Amino acid sequence: NRAWVLAQRPVGEPDDDTLRLETRPMPQAGAGEMLLRTEWLSIDPYMRGRMNDAKSYAEPVPIGGVMTGQVVAEVVTSGVDGYAPGDRVLALSGWQDWAVSDGTGVMRLPKGLERPAWALGILGMPGLTAHAGLAYIGEPKAGETLVVSAATGPVGATVGQIARLRGCRVVGVAGGPEKCRHAVEVQGFDTCIDHRAEDFEAELRAACPDGVDVYWDNTGARPLYAVLPLLNPFARVPVCGVAGWYNLQSLPEGPDRGPQIMATILRMKVKMQGFIVYDSFPPSAYDAFLAEMTGWLADGSVHYTEQVVEGLEAAPHALRDVLAGRNFGKVAVRVG
Ligand code: NDP
Image (cartoon, rainbow, N blue to C red; front, side, top):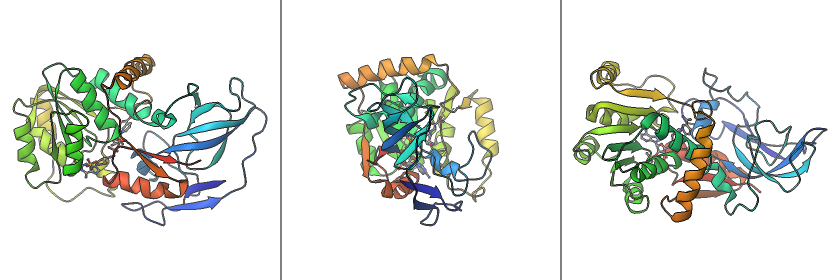
């Protein structure tokens, strides 16, 4: 059984010494447990946070512990009621080939799924994040302008496409011309602005002639600062992630933005709300999401881009790429 364990806590970007690939004995399922074989491992930006020994909404990975991660797995043997060999499940068994589970936190996937890895993306956590975050916090209305950063990632791409379906003008922010083209041509966004371009702020302003009613923040950093002066009265800002800052060890150089941020929230009566998908929405949000998203995927209203990475050994690089914006769409590692 191969497992990636946390060898040391990274300072800034994770590097070759952050994680270590160990070969461990095959786990044995005891009474009331099942043996799971990992098929797909999800790579997500939050994993960087789990490497820090810091207060957060979840416990950090201990040194020597297996890296956290959601997987699609096959049940190989089962002593857990309700699960049988051959079942396919979603589990939080982390970056390893095999795992034993007593069923806690495990969810069975429907039989015969055409694309099981989608349960880690558009039909799973990132998709639900986008759908529920818009329904409960962003509340986009027809005719409004929505800006979303990390616009081609699994969350951002879904947010923008749902907002289009709700009748909004959708402006993406992404890193580089290729991603921006993808957002417009494949995802159907009205336009998309490159946050690495020198005149990014001016281009974003020109792309939002009626201001911004919803800013979905996946990144913080330059996109956030560029949107602030464009926010309309009663704008909503779902604070979904700060991917532009996950590798920060201390406050960056530069002006103190606190006064600008607080004055904007006050004067524009902005609703800025953070959330964590697992506990910020009622259980009914999941059923509403699945019903609507399944329909949209079937009739082609929503497009999903997935980047498959081959082999468990490639997982650390895949995470570094996601954090640096070198991914294209949802990154899923094919393990077995
Ligand atoms: P993505 O695939 O979008 O990856 C993160 C992206 O952030 C990168 O690809 C890059 O895109 C962008 N980025 C990185 N650094 C910077 C920077 N300095 N400035 C601007 N953009 C940057 O990830 P996901 O779609 O999986 O997740 C998006 C966000 O949502 C993340 O912050 C994640 O942590 C968060 N999230 C939060 C959840 C919650 O419950 N609150 C649940 C799920 C996700 P580009 O190249 O386009 O700049």
